[in-house]
Structures are given as C-alpha cells and as structure tokens.
Image (cartoon, rainbow, N blue to C red):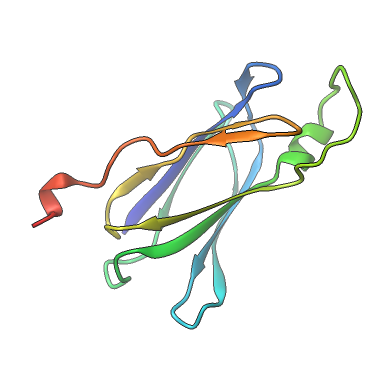
Amino acid sequence: MGTLSSHVLDSVIGTHASGIRVECYQRLPNGSWTQVFDTQASDEGRISESVGTLEDPADTEYELVFHSKAYYERMTLPDDGYQIVNTVVVRVVLPEPDAKYHIPIMLSPHSYSVWWSGQPNASSRA
C-alpha cells in the first residue's frame, strides 16, 4: 500500500492551512473515479493517507482535491473581494504503488503552487 501526503501552506497569512478539507480519488481501469479518502489537514496543515494496494498497476492515477474556497471563507482576509479558485485539483500518477509520495502545496484565494517532494524507492527499481 502506498502513501500520499501533503503539507498545505497558506501563502496569505504565511502559515499552515490547518483544517483544510482534502479529498482523494483513484481512477479505475474503466475510467471512472472512486473516492479513496476525505480528510482535514492537521493543525500543522498536514495529511498522510494510505492509498492503493500492491495489486494496483504502476502509474495508477490519483486526484487530490483541496477545498480552498471553504478554507478561506472561514477567515477574515484584508480584501473580501472575489475568490476565483474554489478548489485546487492535482492529478498524479504513482509509478510504484507501495511508495511514499509527498505533494506540498501553497494556497491563496487566487493562485496555488504545487510540487513533488521526493522520489519513489530506488531500491525497488530493477
């Protein structure tokens, strides 16, 4: 079983996005999606959840959904203008179904930045 984790950072106030809702879906072989988890980030803005099984093919696709609008609606921001980014959707593939994948993200009401931190276990590649 693999692990998907993230550290969600709030670039407006410069801290962790504690309590933000994060969903994860897995693409099935028939092209449909099934929910893997629905969680909230810890006080430190972190999530870490198990995904998939060893029977899943390499390069199984997952979709992380960060509910940024709901997160920012709980805050009093200096400018209560429009928020155009309601959710941030990040699609990733897991080349090794049993590896750990860490995907940090920085959010604001109007933008985001995401990256992959790490690499699959080199020892399992032949």
